[in-house]
Image (cartoon, rainbow, N blue to C red):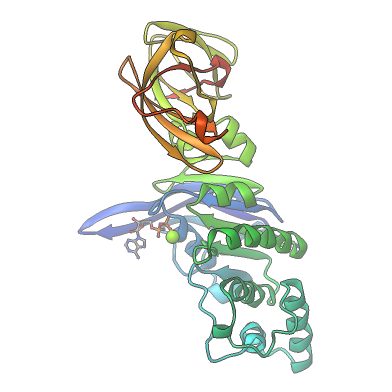
Length: 360
Ligand code: ADP
Ligand code: MG
């Protein structure tokens, strides 16, 4: 049976250069049994520290870790029933695949017969049946990653922690392994925390994403919720991308705001649960793919095209609007003849429905 994880008011202080700072700052969070939650945040925001606290390699300065309602904050790491995959999941180079995978069972003094049965079952699961006698240096990056997964799955952890496990793989293999990890995790029914700084990985793998910023939770939600209704500029720009402009609140409405923006009045959307006040400044977030470039005479807003970058399926344009702010626009690539030249004057259009007001 999968087990829930509760983090209660978790705090970890470190001292650096004589100064104390909170690497994890009063963090509370519930991970449901069987759920795959991704911790997403920039480097240094405390992701690894939280995982190490859950695993028991680090003691929190304050707060508790509960598994299935039981306080395990003071338990030894090896008594927690937790599987951990590090970023550098070094396999034992002098052991073959079978021995690498069997390692955890041997430590537990499992019988030879049971060990063979479990290793064989897990290798089948990760698609490495037949590779038992191979040594790690003869395996591809993806195969080594699968051995690392098998090595943890074999001990049948109820809770599985992964710290940027795909960082050493190339982009294509990463996509394959993401799907693979998700499939295996659901099949094993383990509760999983998957740490990454890569929003694409988090969106692809997670049931829910926890966006972290400086040791604090910025927002928790499903990938769709966070993308559609980010609660802060940090989340809007970290999950997907966003142009962030500044406007002023003119009037409040139900789920909408009237704002003034460079002399214009717009009725824009606001994320549920975010409070605004009249006459205050607000951030206006617009995804680059919602900015349309039109002929200058077809828009009230125009600007000069500063640069265009070819990204394969899209062109990324940067425009300096006549009012002095910069806009990024992503336009589907439709052929070389449609690419707009640098220096061109273009009109800018955004549907107010695609503008989201956020606290500044
Ligand atoms: P992330 O995994 O999100 O990149 P970490 O959890 O590794 O972040 O680190 C969070 C912050 O805590 C960073 O500023 C890091 O330098 C600091 N830190 C981590 N471990 C220690 C330690 N043992 N002593 C002092 N500072 C640490
Ligand atoms: Mg880290």
